[in-house]
Length: 282
Image 1 (cartoon, rainbow, N blue to C red):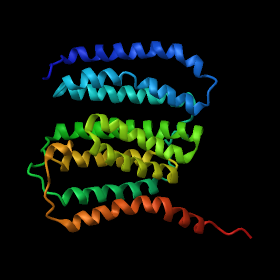
Image 2 (cartoon, rainbow, N blue to C red):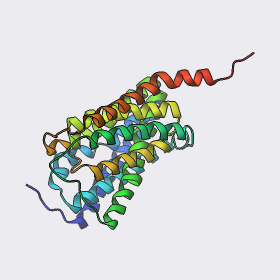
Image 3 (cartoon, rainbow, N blue to C red):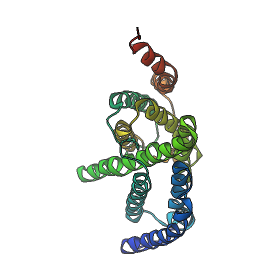
Image 4 (cartoon, helix red, strand yellow):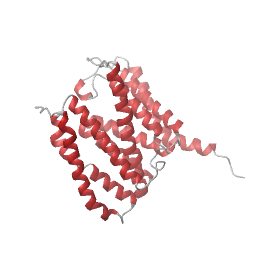
């Protein structure tokens, strides 16, 4: 059963949760001052997500249509503002990954992952056709997935959370911690299958963050991957599409090979190539 919530009431509801969260943070922040900066930032991220508990229980099940899109955009703005506020009090933009370091490596590896996933999608035949968008809706979708989803999620997970865990526990924990958080972000709203896929993509993106040192390329690739999924899939809720047919197994195996090659390259091949390219000291 869906309860229609007027759009005019949505900012008031969200601002109420935001003000309540700020009140709680004013009481807690002084107690975090003596902690490791990374640990303190992670605790603040947990506080940032406290409104998600009543939202998943009450708000999201009762939203559909345009109100749902409005709330999603406001939620991304809220998370983006919180990530900037938590991160910039401790680290520079460059330390959070907003720099030009490793841009071409990020784009090359990210686009390889995107190409692999696209081949997998094209190898599958669904009973439903992909949606058709008018020019205005298409532009809105592109802006939403690049400026809010791509930028917001990369700054939160590969920027803030990666940096916080790295400062607290080290790089290996940063890779796994940011990837697990990325999977949990999706699993509650889109189910365990999407959560498992996002754990894989999160690990690959975290490895790219590790090797490249920046997230600018990841932001671009993230937006491209999301908008391509919207354009190619009948519905981003894959479980609702039923059991698909695979009329093009060659495309499937080619896509899976690219998906498997990218993390292996980042984990094993790239470090060896980088070491061999360094000049030998006389």
